[in-house]
Length: 208
Ligand SMILES: Nc1ccccc1C(=O)C[C@H](N)C(=O)O
Ligand SMILES: [Zn+2]
Ligand SMILES: [Zn+2]
Image (cartoon, rainbow, N blue to C red; front, side, top):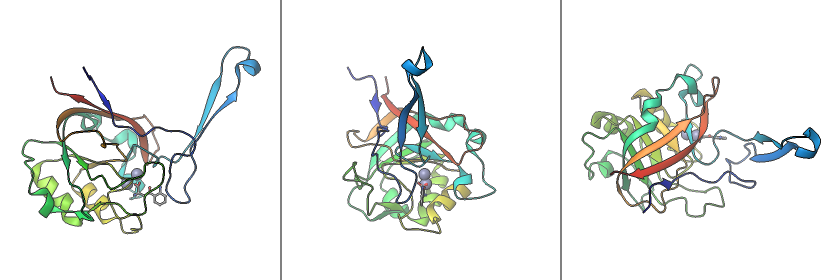
């Protein structure tokens, strides 16, 4: 019996990053031979690599940092819906789904087709998605792509509208094997006091 689905993208040398962003690197900087007792690893990465959350400070200098976010939102009942083959998603597409009573919504767009390369085009959220989801009571949105906005967007309309409606953002989850339905989500950020986001280990557990 499957007790959990790992929806995190593996963090490994060569993992795709935003063009021009810091490459991911893990190295043993102090070997067992050198230290006499242990291997000690060193990690270098952009926070917006693989599966991660954005804190509002990422796109708003006055915005909250990771430690100020509400941890409760990253654990609990989440609904997975699938909306494939669209260039963008807004209120119109979302209206087709029953979202009453749902706090966390994960959207499987299937638009990041080759996980070994950074995508050139993704399904993004239109401006009216944030207002519609807020009306429905959604507080966390998760997507299977690196951004909720178009990849070349500078205005980041979806990020700002979601934030204005107090909807937290989870990006880069891997939903390729996840059937639509309800699950328990766990995707906790690290206690990075100053940070604009955090990598997360995201899992879904079937409801019992
Ligand atoms: N890391 C970057 C490097 C360059 C340009 C954009 C980004 C982003 O992270 C944007 C996106 N809004 C994101 O939250 O993932
Ligand atoms: Zn991000
Ligand atoms: Zn983002």
